[in-house]
Length: 331
Image 1 (cartoon, rainbow, N blue to C red):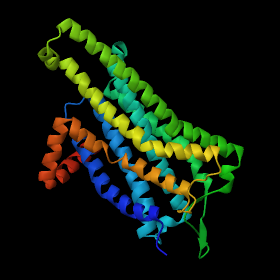
Image 2: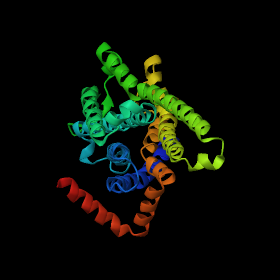
Image 3: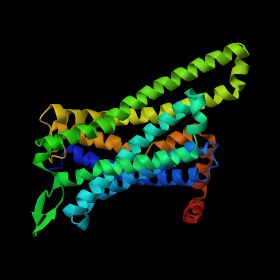
Image 4: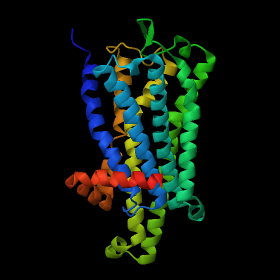
């Protein structure tokens, strides 16, 4: 009997995501770290941190979990403690990726809508602190998950692979913890991103309307107004990043809610079950969101696109730039 359809799809999609996503995020980190894309240092640090988080998701989720299970099932990475640690690191990476998107959305809201707060908040120093806080909280929040797993099977007296404990769905403490996880990732980020985007768009529309009145209705004046052009560019990239997150995470949000309100369970190896198919589809779409920001930057940022073309035309320069970046980071 052949493999279930969802497994066949995963065996094709995950290697493609790794082949495309890992180099894309590496290139993004290198290009943005050089600070030559006409972006503020604040925005640059958020973008670099988001690329690092997305790269971590691809490494721990796609390579060390999905691809490893299919192509290298007997590696020591399947030893239960290592398997569990890999899942926890993946969850930390996912939380960081999600909340850094929220942090960037809030930063752009402040920059566009809160002129008084902008000077103090929208700085490289504040961005670094926020990134540090997001990563630290994500680690602390995810640590208990390590104890929610047990061996899926025992092979040669060794615990092998990972399975969620039955008590995870029954004990009040675990149920409360899982509710907290769902609220923090991804329910609350959904709400916050939508909320800040609505406020940001409203502020941009109101400000542009006022500037049009002050400058008159001449279309040429509107197109040549640098502030209106900058706001329009900011809104485009913000909407692209936020919309990408919402669209590609909606299926995962649905599956998490179904676990709470139905008898459905996560990580059950029944790949013909409709819920499991929905769950695995959500994971693939969620992972896809870690591969798309590079292409968003390439479309919306001319200088980023120019640097990307240079790296594609001259691949050797990628290694040189990466070595310089590593040396500068160490120094």
